[in-house]
Image (cartoon, rainbow over the protein chains, first blue to last red):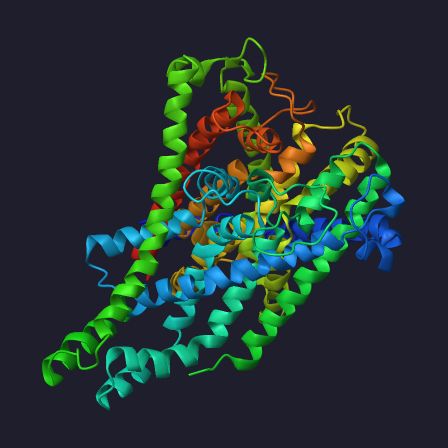
Length: 300
Length: 318
């Protein structure tokens, strides 16, 4: 509609200004766009440099291997790191089967003209944009208390984070499945494979790199999430490592938040150091994901 | 999408009508049922969200003898005082102001970035810029909160610009949330601009238009519904953003319109109240759900609008 309008405008209106004036305006326009593009990147760069200046001097082996303490000089993030690793485990364990199965159903089995399938689709799109703190409320009401009553444990925290990123896993897995050309499946079916045999032996293996990339990116989103964990109520002063799924825990983003909230500046510097550790972990995960995507993704 | 379903239809019924029903292996049907159950879980999650929020919200209105109208319009939000007031207006107002500031930042930056990526950047520049934007989108929001509180407010707002802002202020929160949603706005808007058919651009070039004129007068108007979708989705993310505002904007519900002072958003209230061990059934606990329900409804409406707009440009061009 708008395109038709744009295309059907008179020549004079599309051109507007005489050619001589155009080059100056054209150049300043490119400059404007380049400036607008660079603002966000500059902020990112300043953020990284500022955090590095604050945090790097605090980083040491004893910081990584100490527990939180009321004294900044003794405080460390061992329990936060182990807590985050436990959460990653739970999240992975939940989202891989659930996310891939949902994606398989929607891509390979669902008849898109049925109302229930359309509801599932729209619902996933909407869930992906629900604020993470709302999942925190759900986790508090149904997982920590209420029906599941798991308490403030690793399992409760992991399940809540899994809910936050599940829509992302489903969406990226669907894209990975869709990238496998239909001819592969048709070939398998033509040779007498059942639908599930074609999926299990042809489509799924071919889409594993794409699915794995999506899963890793989702996990890296999950471990940076703070808001839901505040509500699910991981305690911030946990001076021990989690011993199991039913153990209380803290996590890196929570520890960071707790230190930022301290009025003492010394704790804020510790927060910067913990941020560096969290960012390094995220960069590692992303590097693995990008490598997977570039190395193993097949071009058809 | 269209070709997809065509292919699926072709593979499905044809194969079955030739070879008979594809139920040769025991369990084919069972597998389909299991997969359907997995996909249906997401609906169960949504239902869970709605029931848990709505249930406690109803108890909240019943228990506290708060009328819906005083909840929506009341100017005081002091649920934890001995004489509690439950007017959500300060929180809604704080949310609106911060979202407004965020959009003022994110709309020009996001659209500018999208136009640059879609219309100007060479493939090499694109392949460097896009992952960097993804990186920006991947930085945990608690990190942006730290940045807003310890660098942006003292060094930029106070130091560089000499503004008279308090330690916790809505301005820093809003601006940083704005930077945070730039990748969201930019990526949706760029998808829409890239989907504009090349023939429209070539038509304008043929009439003697410059690249700037093509961008501003052809591509942007043609991609307008997609750009709108990006902005609305960005707004929805700004409304739901918790950590930056919780850390940097302060935790004081206020009706003051001055963004240089502290203000509390709906998300920040939920975070600040849920931080401690709120007992089930207490006023604070129920207030979390009432505010959460309002938040959920606002973002649901924004997301629905955004999805509509995306569908519109997809229908036109794909």
